[in-house]
Image 1 (cartoon, rainbow, N blue to C red):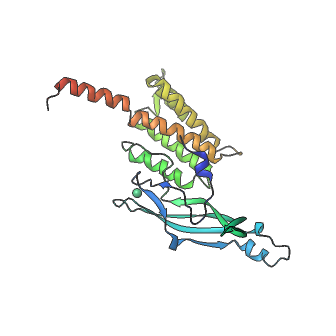
Image 2 (image 1 turned 45 degrees about the horizontal axis):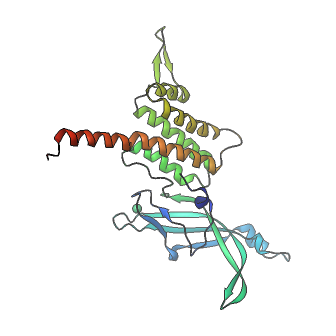
Image 3 (image 1 turned 180 degrees about the vertical axis):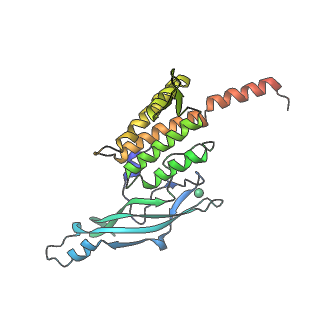
Length: 252
Ligand SMILES: [Zn+2]
């Protein structure tokens, strides 16, 4: 399950969170300190001239490169976002001292970290939609919701769920996503319920109230489960190797 607190936490320059690389799924994207830069927003810069200025008025923009620490991957990513300044007490040889600390929140990362591990057997066309959604889920949850919706459209197509059916009067009827999920339910009733729930999240993306990142995390939890069941079903794998080994009776 996606750790909501972890992904929503701000960071400071010296304590970047442990993000898994979405390219190799094993390495960690480490912040390259030399590439880390931040600036005040225009409004914050102008507000410095005001007599009533306070650190709480400061809004920052940052940019940095990240690099995967897996030697066989070494993917680089660019991350940007926003920040603010907080006043804290730090102890210098036991003496309390007021200091200002900059905190940052990510807005966009390309290529993005892996919010969940996509099973390796998931076809590239589905994987691409999910990774695209990872890139924008911080700042544009609605667009991420649309990507997730496209991912399940593609999943159904690859699961050979028809887009069109022929009516009794021999008319071609185009099925919408909802109907296709119900059709998939004839083959796999349990998973179709999970997919339907993902679809409801995607639907909210077009509503005026929009989506929050928590909604996207719900969809990711469901999607992770569905993809795991379809493309990395361990029960199926265990059954298969048990059958093969028993058939050979230990002979190689
Ligand atoms: Zn990597």
